[in-house]
Amino acid sequence: AVLGVVPQGKSIVKLQVPLPPQHLRNCGQWLLVEARLVEGTQLLPPNFVVAEATFTICKPLVAIPSQRSSEHVVCAGSAAPVRSLQLPGVAICSSTAAEGETVVIAPGYRARICGGSLDSLSAREGPVLLGPMAFRHNFFRAATDNDRCGIDFFVPWAVRVPFVTGILQLTGNLSFSKIWRHAGLDRLQPIVNSCLWGNSPGGPSLTVAEQYVVGTSSKVGAGGRALFRTETVYTFGPAEVSIAVRVEALSPIMRMATLPRIGCTFVAAPRLSVLEWLGCGPGESYPDRKAAADWAMHRGSVDDQHVDYVVPTENGGKADVHWAALTNPEPPHHGLLLRYLCHDEAPDDEQPGDMPADRRPAGTEGAQLNISRWLVNELDAARYRHELPVRDVLRPVQVHIDTAHAGIGGVGEGGAKLWATASQFLISPKESPWTYTVLLRLINADTWGGAI
Image: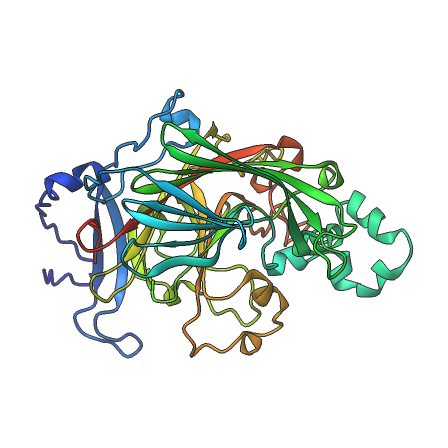
């Protein structure tokens, strides 16, 4: 409605919000109110958004209850607007010993396992939606400006002096970026220790034990130190794939002040260019940068999530995400729904006076989501944005889901270090392990109740 509010004036309007369809009422409802200019001014165009606010009409219900109260866990999950179809049958596995792969054919999807990892996920009679190398663990991020700040940034030659790097790290004056690279977080490679197939109430299951070691030669993991130990349990149900993860930090990194992230990465098909999510938005947000974000359901294109900083860096993150959906805008709108669950004890709420680092940043209430067409190492290696790979090619979508993601910093220690991150938003390796679950379900226009 055109309210015709004059400067310093006031207008009141009553809004009647219709209820959503019955099958979507458990998924929550929000009202976005925007105030726009009817006519342009000398500096502002017509339809410019002067102010906006999001109001929660009703909260989503918990998707999968846990033994603990939903208020005391990191994320008990929220119902997503997906319609469940009756899919008769169970998942069936078939192995090809010569090629070292296993194919799982379920009523709702087709999955390919290779080398102890999910390699691809596709519709039974449709396109590949995840893959190749569809799933991997991720412990490194493209350095932010604050990550690069330290004595080594302002006096680069100092780290070439014997013992100076260790002294700077002990005194807290070495940049996070230098610490992470020195430890080898940017060149980790997996070594599979064991793969064990079994049967579970949810369907066939695969338990994979791995170590992530620092790659030191062309031969995978040759001579590298092990920094993480992971256990990944895939469960193949009739309609969805459950990936339960346990991550343990090992002794070589225990003295770090913080880890950059603990999470995983999925590689989605290039055509999945529409993103919808339940979490903080619509702009980028992080554990220490989310007070101005609205926790609600949001929608946008994949390419619009990239923030094109002059110096490429970690960007476009979404904090406290419970689920995210990627869809093809063209009919029949094939897509993928990812739901995050974590029944670990929730971290404390953030405090004005700061507090010691914990397993997850203070106030974490969901996953940290990042969507990008560039790899982490591409963002980290580029000195300026024009050095990123060509933008006119439709590249696969990198989907990062982190159960813990360190804050991006800024005035964390008052005026002493303008780049510092408050301790309460760091990730302490001493507090490991981390556990979480990601559920994957294929969707289309018949099953998805989002904006498509």
